[in-house]
Length: 159
Image (cartoon, rainbow, N blue to C red):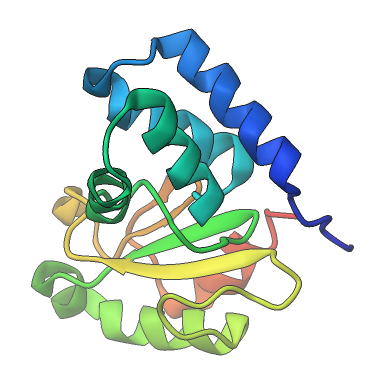
């Protein structure tokens, strides 16, 4: 499957539509960035510039917010984003082995996106579900008590 690149006109139109929805006020910066990120799959530099222009704030302020929140990305991501909890509670109950299997199956390291743009692999400090560790989140689906043998089956559920 080939993914078409996003052109400048699409970026500008997406940003303008989202800003119209929320209003061109700096208090709406996070919801605006979140919506643009969802529409485009990430926040390209042109989107950051357009948001800054429309909200009358500096590009550095927009970039600072865009890079602070885990839910936002300034780099292109895959169709499916995998978050793996690297906290101590998850590792104590077998997370290290699950992490190894996940990296083997995807042939990715943290922060990487597969060449076919299907997967992005990321680690997080805590997902807040320590009682069911090890934990993997794919898109918005949470998988708890994951074992290394479960990884291929979990991944096969996503196109």
